[in-house]
Image (cartoon, rainbow, N blue to C red; front, side, top):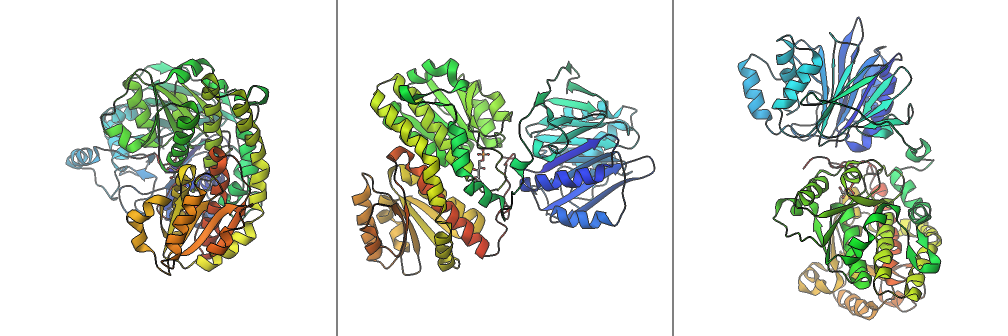
Length: 610
Ligand code: M6R
């Protein structure tokens, strides 16, 4: 969840670290710090709050160093304050460490180190690391060896970078459970928790695997396992561009990403629809299509928005591929004792590809012999690499903490997989073609919905002071109700619940009064008449209704307080359209409340801790 960046080379590392931290701020933003080493001066500068505050503090110091590390924090152990911010250091303040992850046995290690005379000044688990390394250095070990020995004692997860003023020609990086990449430059090298931090300087990337540590010099790097086995690492050229990770004139990344959905949805489909055969072509699943078509059961496991996408996938797979499908929170899946049969296939959906719970669920499923397939956005991410097969959603970098374009692209990929399997089974050519044609029309329809932005902003004005929201939908649009509610709570801090519309009368109806806004997702599909009855039930109790309805629907306006009219498509694809107004509604309410839309409180983009 925290952001990590490190530099060694001939340039001043300070601006490089600050720029990197700004790029990484979406991963954690409660405090930030840098540690630098040069011949005459080693220092750690930290600050509570955002990177811009750290930058202000640093601006007056005139710092120069060729070796440095930077960190932006998302607190797990200890308050978000200056003392607890990273880098942490040893007593002599000449060994600096930044850490992403959780040291599970930190209390035991801390007690042991205290007995050796080490003094602790923070409340963090991470502070044991510099002292532990120091305890090996004082026995005459090199920095690399000391880190290796320390890691043998540490239980938990880490992405770690360490620098030491007695060995200023290198930095050491290690990974277990928290992503870390090396960036290879000309007489300079970089380390980062994700490539966006170093993309301005290099596109040559080495992905570290769990259990690996690497000694990075300005002209070379040496990778080894914790058990000291040397390993050869491949250098990958990545295609991501800087424009993709800029705001491009928008006020917020979230708005840019919502508005970019005609393009991102198009990119997710590009070259993958085989229109004349009414099917799809997915390179990443080529070798496993038969296995998929023969599956007796599909399990989809994910967290948050990706889990909501999985729920839509369940409706698609069961309706068209006729394969029983279960969707499970990754955090639950990994800790219960799931029954996995040899004919089951499991999809793990994750935008970041680094979500700790999803990754752990994937590993658990693998141990049990399941076929594990990934649906990820971030190329080269852990889930993508550890899956046996999979599909990238190609939505482009998603920086806003609230997931938007990843959701619609995940649904596109799930629809493509549905076509692939269903056409191998009993879906007719005519039906396959119809779905494929409708998919191709989606970018234009999304663009049409985005033109309602001003209208939706006005609705947001009317509801910005609401204390609660209820979202109701049926069938394919029930997961959209969940997703709409999640968007509202995470960026607007307004309590919001999503329910299947018919469930309302089994409890939530008690909440309805003249102060309760209810968002109905009510396109004209086979559940429409039922939805109208639910709307009547709410009206009878004076609830205020905002309906997301079909363009062609002239009846609904008479029943509800506000309507957002959108184009129709076939039922299975409707969530890709109905979710867009809900993203915009949450966005505008958050902006009107003066909240930080891209970095909502307590959240981080990529949840790499349990
Ligand atoms: O990267 P992932 O898709 O695995 O992330 C899963 C959730 O953490 C994520 O969707 C989260 O719920 C978002 N903040 C939702 O907007």
